[in-house]
Amino acid sequence: MKLSVIGCGYLGAVHAASMAKLGHEVVGIDVDAQKVALLSAGQAPFFEPELPEILAEAGQTGRLTFTTDMSRVADATVHFIAVGTPQRHDGNAADLTYVEAAVDGLLPYLNADHLVVGKSTVPVGTAASLAARVAETGATLVWNPEFLREGFAVKDTITPDRLVYGVPAGDAGAHATEILDEVYAAAIGAGIPRIVTDLSTAELVKVAANAFLATKISFINAMAEIAEATGADVTQLADAIGHDERIGRRFLGAGIGFGGGCLPKDIRAFTARAEELGRGSSVAFLKEVDAINLRRREHAVTLVVDGLGGSVVGKRIAVLGASFKPHSDDIRDSPALDVAVRLHGLGADVVVTDPQALENARRVHPHLHYELDRDTALAGADAVIVVTEWDEYRRELSPSHAASLATGRLIVDGRNCLDPAAWRAVGWEYRGMGRP
Ligand code: UDX
Image (cartoon, rainbow, N blue to C red):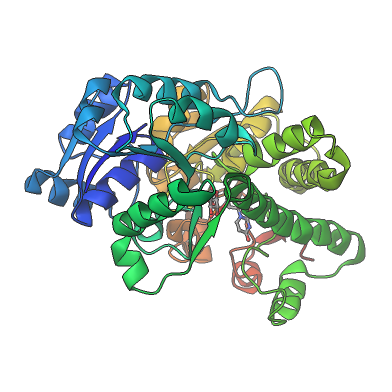
């Protein structure tokens, strides 16, 4: 099939390359000429496992091209909208400027043979408000949310947990479903569940999924706060409740909380939209979810300050991690980097290390000291804090090796990813999040 993908950020670049890998002919369109140049050369503009390989593979087949020229959408009949919907600068709502621009840019090229497929995460009701404009051209608008996780984006795109199609009622919806089934023939053939809904339900599925995940993380972080007041251990608590299949252990990792380009902005946009709908009280708990999440960053900072006797002024602190989670170079709303910035603000001599995210971190926080080499970052440190659970820190850093480099013996485990006994055994003072 001939597809266009408008917006070649995380979602769009991965979607374009994955669709080409599946055999479709794909043109990716982005306003950023530098990004287009990189993608055209087969290079990923961000760190994402498997993406460079499929970009190179699809590029060689000639089925995947990238351009800044919107008129190239005329080569395709199915158009995916994959532009960003960041948080607005003036509040919590989502900024829909890019979605609006993508749809407006497409309109001159559409006719009754075309299908426009929204993938961006949008406030419920957005698709309905765009559908009339698309319908004037004879084309149909559907919403097909994406659930990809950074670090597993290619796998999540090619073999998702489920497919959700939000389509209009009647023949137009039935026809759109057939077209999407053809796009996703490989996944459908593999028996991946497909749920066909109306437009609003599809939009809501995405924000509800992210709200649930955020709530699960903040729930366990709330339990960590109670554990701290009582001497209980939140990781054992999570193991114990996680054995209940109805609860499940995943996303019960207590620590410095969630960040990234999705969960924080999505729960805020959801709250803002619910308030517009007069249903603010239905999701009022998401404000608490947000507040718990942000409190945990401050708590990690407090653990370092207290562990160093009440002040970090002039103390060298090795901060292990900058990305919002491992297997990513994304620092958007990164709890890890936030902790580093807060410690720096308190007068600490902060040294940040991360295997992938330093270039991005330096661009946004040029005042921090960065070291790519983990051991150089550890050398002479008065305290060490793990804020992103990369294998380099979690599995591959032995407590005795760290002790041979650092000057102090305080280790703060912001992700509860270390073995306290192993660190204590060689003389470290171990402090975790919600652990005695
Ligand atoms: C998320 C959703 O998982 C995905 O389905 C959606 O499409 C986009 O948003 P992503 O932002 O890539 O994906 O990251 P995710 O793996 O969900 O992690 C989000 C954050 O939660 C990270 O900062 C992570 O460190 C944190 N987290 C996750 C915890 O603090 N504890 C956990 O137990 C799990």
